[in-house]
Image 1 (tube, helix red, strand yellow):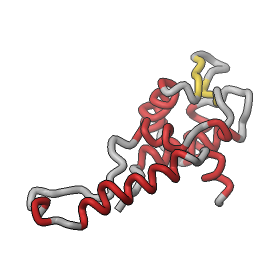
Image 2: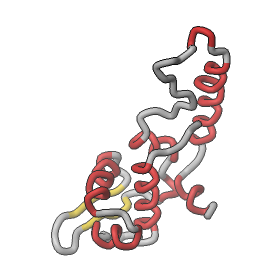
Image 3: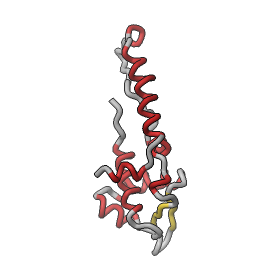
Image 4: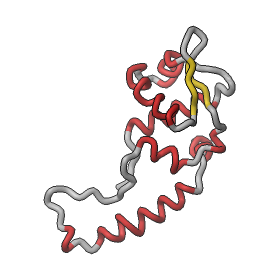
Length: 131
C-alpha cells in the first residue's frame, strides 16, 4: 500500500523544525542534532527543498536554511512530488498477473486518484497539527 519513503519523512521533519524557527537561518548542524538525522543525509535532502523554492539557503557563519513559505501555504501534494517518484498503490513484480488482475485498476487508478485528490487539498500545516 501507499507509504512515504524515509527521505520524505525526514524532509517533513526538517520543514516542521524550520517552521518553528521562522525568519531565521538554521544551521544543518542544529537541524541534525534536534532531529537525530545525520548531516550527510540532510545535505542530500535539503537542496531538493531549496530547488522546490520552499526553503532557501545561505552559506557562511550565520548561514543555514530558512523557510520561504509558511507551511500553511505549502501544498502537501506538491511537496510529496519532490521526493516521491510514484504515488502508486500497486507495485507489480516480475510475476505480475496484470492480464488477469481485476483489482489493479481499482488500486492503481480509482483509489490512487481519490487519495491524490485528498492530498492536493491539504497543506503541510495540517500534518503537523495532527500530532
